[in-house]
Image 1: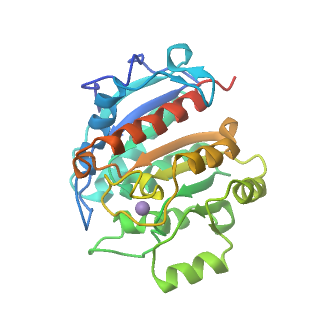
Image 2: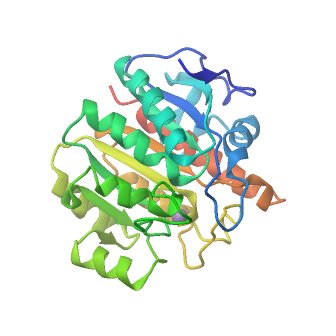
Length: 286
Ligand SMILES: [Mn+2]
């Protein structure tokens, strides 16, 4: 397994992989960040601050202490180009899926998501993708690479048919990106009833969730590379969370926390709480 052990465990997680359970894997990379860097430190910051948050979720009435999951540490990145990093993520996710774990990837920047989706699609050909994000990420190329964070959803659409992709919370992009989103019926406001209805189009298809933390308003989460006013708060996040069919989620990522950009650490606390809720949702579904 191409990983390094966690420097600081996510709360009291088991270090070894458990079939059927979520497995945290960090991707410390921000090589294509074009505005403000720092997401490379996301995985470490989330683990470190996890010691300071409760393991119990009153919202879900579940506790990490009674939940099967593993924190496997970070992927060893022997590449500094985004395509190479995506390839490492592809390999690592392939290994996790072979062992029937559910990859939960901690970014890092958004550019590695197509690598994860490519690996998971090999196991689940009918895979559908839900993106929660402020940005369309539909550029064909950005900063001289097709593998920039700004191209993540374009690369996913190279693999997954448009009708199996939903992009929720998007409030920033080019005129062309928005024209495409609207024409493809993929654009959703962050409104739980709409999300529930749209997800029902996928039937029983397995689902990949890519969660860019900049879907949150900068007042809630300023510690991100490309903040975008007009985002969601925690209550709206909970309402969206409640309509996601977690039984069908076969992989997910939580990306774009840049901890040093928020000296209060509240952004990192929020990110860790998101990760906790996702582990609780994925680790208690039998
Ligand atoms: Mn974004």
